[in-house]
Image (cartoon, rainbow, N blue to C red):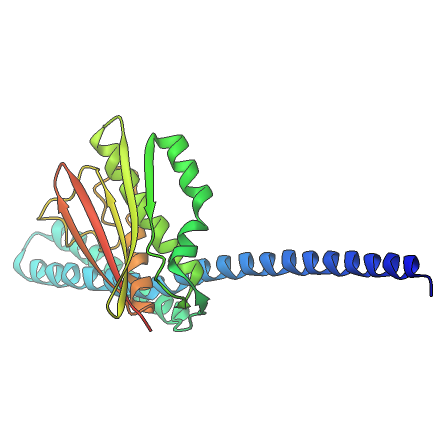
Length: 259
């Protein structure tokens, strides 16, 4: 066979193989995106039973106070109003119980992933924050951190929710130049994600309330983000500590066990 023809055929085969590999790579990337989106939706479904449980705990004392006040008052007008509150509270509690059972979901998809890679995968998100909020984001990753079994979509949600909290804190401080530092660190048998901002900070009185559903110091904020983070931490057997100096900064330090 003609050597030139052989080379031509090999070149054509190589080109076809490269095209197939490129196509396969694109399909894999699309599947990964779909998986990450599924994981993000999954955490919303997971957090709902937790929210329902906490809401029910809030309703219980309301019901108790209604019943106590009803027995103490002789005013029929107030008795009628208290009965309405009692009925509404019971109906809402019943609805919460139904929804809690419906949304109860203990499944979580995990795969091999790397915390550093997840952070760098959010570079476009960080770039948009810098552009639209006059905030500078600095990233410092420890290259010694190895792959772990993670729900990549949920870890993305964890990071973005904490960053969104930092953005709100910086805006509330009304400063010209906001700074968010994102750092990873390997230490002994664990690795850390540390997020520090130079925002308004959190008071000592409120620092334990930030995980409470619907609690927020920022007007217009729904107060769900950190509740979702709490569930993601639980899913990954991670723990978070929050240190803050009011008027100066806040630091979220999340520790993952290196498995």
